Length: 102
Image (cartoon, rainbow, N blue to C red; front, top):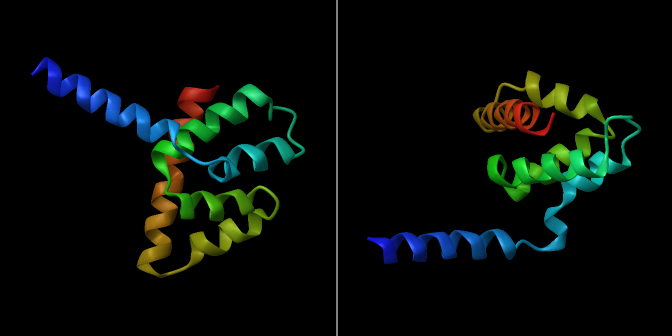
């Protein structure tokens, strides 16, 4: 059992380390925003939460919302199941980031 837990821990650690630099889209968008609360530490924390709560595709979409929040509103108002699912993941991400990164 201990060996299984160690292997599982190592496997998850390796997956987290192997994320390419392009995966930091949320962090870059956060840092580029004109928000005074967008510190390097906070944006890094938000990126870590995004890595847990959002797919890479989700992150690419959400990163665009930092410069064009109207895109988020359009997705929210959309009636497709796919957009509804992304909006649910985004809300979950936002709640997690607020709880963890403040």
